[in-house]
Image (cartoon, rainbow, N blue to C red):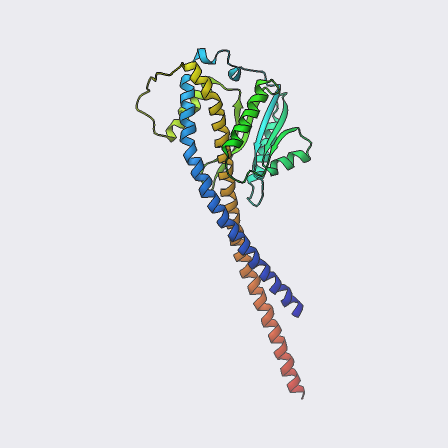
Length: 296
């Protein structure tokens, strides 16, 4: 019995220590979430307005013959998988990896290559022997403009040089604090019709004028269009990184909150068991004392 009490006391102390750790991680994730969410909400209207302007400029003359709008047969394709560097965020990483695997299985004759953002996805696919052409880790949990520009330029170079025929993103779309939706979307090549449709759908997030304004563009609409294209691609990568980090911090905050609640329940259960064991020990000692007194 003394050994059982010792074990139970040690377990109660372990549960209390774990609870302190999970509560601290929950608070840290909540602080990071507020910063990441503010960046995401501030960047979405800018990206939506930029896409809408690009869709207006994507006339037949501007798109015709443009290499980024060329319709290719997707023999070689690149999948950019966005995951977290760390775990302890529930099923966040496993849901993204599962969607990426489903996309790779539905290849339609394509030869896939991977670009992994985040340590979890990179480690998973590396162990399975898949072709990983680029890995980006230790991002610090916050979107960075230089990183977005570097990744956008690298993907654009691979597409323009013909090393890949299409680029797809697999990332978590942030919906609410409790919901993030794993999503696959096409990054390259571009399509004028889908560009206009998605710009029209996103325009509801930001206030739009009552009527379209016919702007005078200098030096020419084609020059402005070609100048906006790299900025649009960079903004898409940046917003995707913001979606990733906001969803990650939200998932980790919820997971640590659930872990803290589980520690409370487990601690209460262990305390009850400890009290029962201690009462049983005291009762046994009293019985021994009474029995000895009666024997005397």
